Image (cartoon, rainbow, N blue to C red; front, side, top):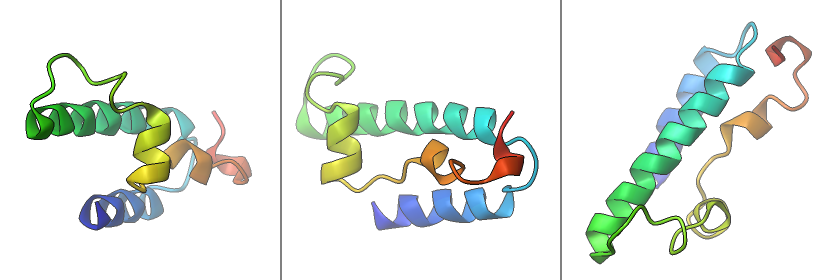
Length: 79
C-alpha cells in the first residue's frame, strides 16, 4: 500500500495546478475499483467487493490516500 500511496501522492503533487478536482475524482474511482478487484482475487471473493471492501475499509484500514480530499483547501483546484 505504501508503494501505491507514494505513486498517487507523487502524481497529485506533480499535477496540482489548475482545475484538478475532476481528474482526482476519476483517478480515485479507478484506484478503488482496481484495488477492490485485486483484493477479491487475493481473498477469492466473488463479485466486485463493495460489501467486503467498502470505501471506509480502503481508507481507514488499508490507508489508501483520498485524492479529492487533498484539493479541499486549494482554491485553484476547484472546477
